[in-house]
Length: 113
Length: 113
Image (tube, rainbow over all chains, first blue to last red; front, top):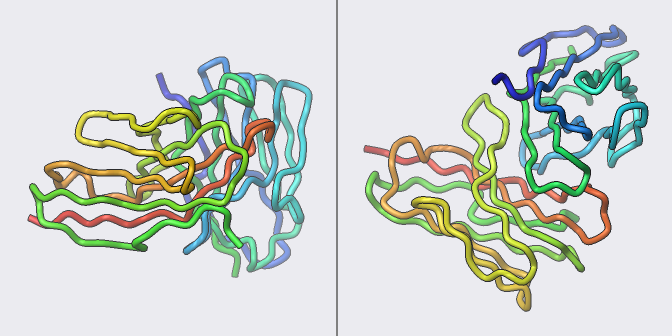
């Protein structure tokens, strides 16, 4: 049982390049989330998808877009990467938005130079 | 200003000793408070979850307490082991926030032989 799988694990981008972070869960969860984690700060919500077919902005959505491809997959896209987007990105899922049980992926460490 | 503050930022303890981590929050009202453990290079994993009406919750050698009147929580680690070396994150779920959790920055614990 893999849980939440994120790819890639590491990525280096040049300023202005684009990329998509992939996330897939195999727990039949309805809700999925993208967070970023920066040194000295708590995880911050970028976008979330309460259920298949819906997406909404979180606390720090600027510079990102998301796609809920199906119930399993939720991708995060950086259209024009900036050094301020250097961070560790975590995807998470839960049965419902108000569920206690969040499962996190192992993260993607992104560096923008 | 972060609504969830944790202290200390980091600590080093000897294997076998106990330690207590602190979490102060201003989130109000809230429905539950969670403690997560995050190993280096991994995503957070849930340790305990307490509703606003609970005072204590244990998970093996981990015991969390909650004082909703003073808006403080603590996580006590008993008889620490080398595998306890990790970051411990306090997370508060605001009432009616529809899953938009507030994360503390974490306390980095290092257990030495």
